Image (cartoon, rainbow, N blue to C red; front, side):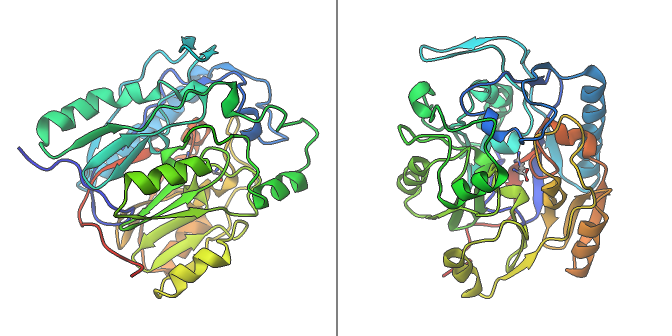
Length: 366
Ligand code: ARG
């Protein structure tokens, strides 16, 4: 019997990771919380159905290459088991015409110490996505006697979980920014809802983004579930589509974090970092003006890198400015081409979920 699961942050030496799979991916039909995340000018408005096969094949090839690169650097890689995502689902509370994908794993699985928890996602199309990871979870459970296999309280996702007239085709970008600043999001507070990728783990501290995919009630739930950790609710004015913290605020090693220059950490939390001699550096500008076709995310996937240890980072191979900045910050860069996988939900950090990193629960902000 060995220790299989352990991870307290995003930068200690990575030894074991899950890399997502693009097979069977579907662009989900509209549902109460999804239209707000499709950018106003996106070609994807109103579109749904299985993703074009050639795009799936290209993404799968890049995901395989990422897995191979990780293995070459001594990281054990596991892969989920995709379901047939293109089928309707139903619970006592809702029905949806399809699921989505098992990309990216970071949105679904939250590893804290010896526990991996499946999240409480607010999108109906993601309600059963955790099933793709259950074979791996059972394996870890069999092999590691200390592994805690957990599922967060499942949200019901009835119509009461969403504000119904929140979104309107004509809403301007300015108005969206005002809503982010006012912490006015599409979800209500009838139950805790959260995506694992909204949680930034820094040992004893969890910085959790309040936005379109994670609500206030989730923050309260986290405080009670992890009484020994400190939970900080963060909100980044400047992001019209605040979804997942990992293209906004990305730690590289203890004492160093890069921040999206368009989405600045508010003063209140900035003080926590500065008081503990952390450097908050503006991330380099993305190398691209637009995301690839059929992609929901922004060009800021440029900063969504995967840190292998305090000196090594995997960056997307065409993100020349980000790679140059990493180099200047003293990191060795491993470039991996990944833009074909972006449309499937994100870049290198998103597309993975931690199983094992060395190190324990440090207090970086005593
Ligand atoms: N909302 C981010 C952006 O477009 C993308 C975050 C993707 N992260 C993830 N874990 N899926 O800038």
